[in-house]
Length: 397
Image 1 (cartoon, helix red, strand yellow):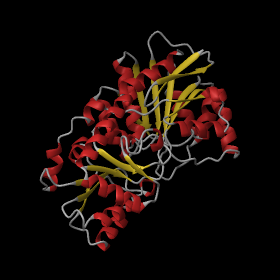
Image 2: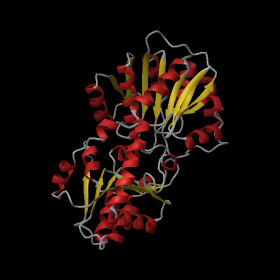
Image 3: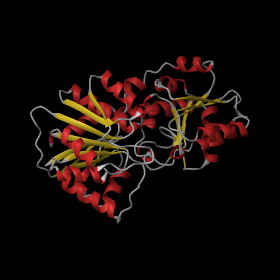
Image 4: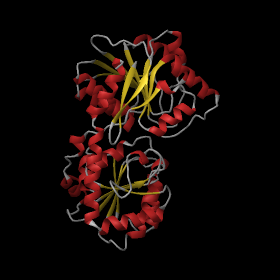
C-alpha cells in the first residue's frame, strides 16, 4: 500500500493507494514543467525540487525555452539545481498543442526512476501521454495547478485523461479538495488522486522590510497601503479592487492602493483609476522580486479573485502577517475563514469588499487579530511539510 500524506490547515491525513512502484536506493527525480515559469505553479515545483535535493535526491528540472522561464532558470541555478530550458515543450498563456515528435524527443532524452510533471492546466497534454505510452515509459506523478475546470466530465478528453491516469500515472496530485473532486468527476479513480497543499516560504515572507517598499513610493510608515499583489487579469478581478477602493477613498484620504504585478488588464485599470479621479491615490509598481517587503508594508492585502486552486499569493500574505480581504471562492474557502484569519466576501460583491476595506482601515485591533491568525495558519503550509508529503508519495509509504 502507498500512503500519501495530505496536509490540511489543522492536521495531516492519509490516503491509501495500491501501487507496485519501488523507490531506488538514491532518488533520481526528473521534474518536467508544462508551465510558463513565472507563476505560483513554477515556484511550487522549484520549492519541491530544492527540498528534495537538500534531502539527497539527484534532481533535474526541464521547462520550456521561453523568455518567462529565464528568471526561473536563474533561481534554479542559485540553488544549484540542474535545469534545462527546451524548445520541445510548448507553452503559452492561451494554451498551445504539443508537437508529437518533440514529445518523443523529450522523453527519449530525459527520463528518471521518478518523473514528476507540473502543469498549470487540469491535465497533461494528450500528445505527451501518447508519446510516453509509445516509448513504454514508467508511471509518473503529476501535480495539476489549474483553478479552472477547462475539461468537462463526459467529454472525450476527460475520458482519455481518466484512462491515462489509471494506466500511466502513480498519482494525480491536487493542491485543493475542490481540484481532487473535479479530477474524480472527470473519471480519475479515487485511488489515483490525492491532495498535497501548496507551500509558502515562511522565513522569507515573514521577514519583509516595510521601509523598502514605503521609500520606493515616497510614503511614510503611517500611510495606509492597500496592496493587490497578483496578476492583472480577469481571474483576479483587479477592477473590483479599484471599484471597492473608490467607494471608501473619500473616507480615508491618506490611503493608497498599490498594484504589484503585470497583466493584460493594466490599461483598463489605469483608465478606471483615471475615471474615478484617483490617479494620485493608486500606484502601479509592476513586477517586483521583493514581494515580502511590499507585504510587510501593506496595511491590508486585497484580492477579489473569482477562483483559485490553492493560491500561493494568499499563502504569502498570510505568512507575512498581513490583514487579508479576499473572496470566499473555491480554493480560498479551504484556507480563509471569515472573521478569523481574513475577511471574505462573495465573488463580485464590490459593495461587500468596500465595506470590508472600511472595517479594516478603521479598526487596527481587528487587523492585528486577523493578521496574527493568518500567520498561524500559514505555519501549516511550510515547504518542508509539502516535501514530506511528496517524499512519502515517491517512496510508496
